[in-house]
Image 1 (tube, rainbow, N blue to C red):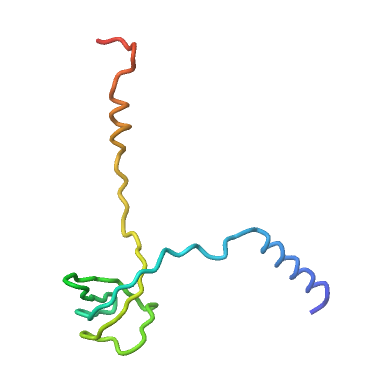
Image 2 (cartoon, one colour; image 1 turned 90 degrees about the vertical axis):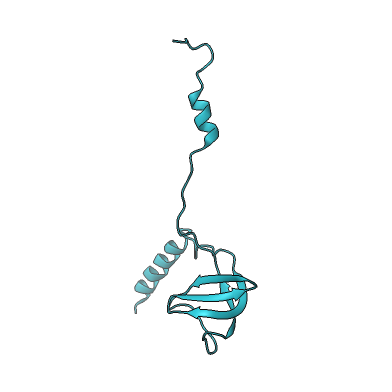
Length: 107
């Protein structure tokens, strides 16, 4: 490769690097739960913790070390992900809009 092309490639790399694009989005906090496996499918694992059943989603990217099977005691590292978000109307704002303004004519 000629010096000219090396210079152009270096310049493009510098320009792209100076755009200030984030290297990676921040990940949410990681939590963990430990207990025996009650159920196991390709997309979910159910673990018992105390008297509670914890259903945790998993996929092909979920790293598994050891022999994962029902009855095995496992420690699962997980992150919480929102499935849906419903925004409720602000009750305080609705009440303020319903009140007539001072000095308004009553009819």
